[in-house]
Length: 143
Image (cartoon, rainbow, N blue to C red; front, side):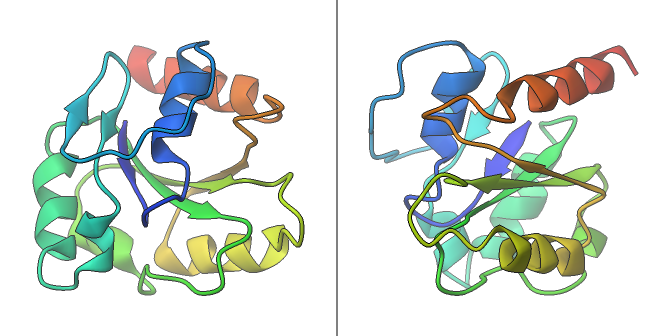
């Protein structure tokens, strides 16, 4: 799964949670290829000059694209219909659902407008939603 989201959206933390590792903050400086994820720096999404090229390029290396938005994010970086730029299934992952002031319904709407076919609210800290996401990823691997 290719993880795409702004800086501090929780991409690396989600990767750690999916692998069953302790969640420890680590700023991603370059593209990391793990056994189940491609973790990219948030700057790839935040910079409009490279965001679409990076999304398309790394999507070719994955089975699924995961758009990440923190439930505490004040605005959305993903345009409506962004799924049309890629040829892979795209899911939405709402991270930080346990954050103070989390706005899960608003972030869900953003991800639906982007074209995500399924949306997974998760907390890498409490583990909520991680099992359901892992189950989905296991189905994608088999399919």
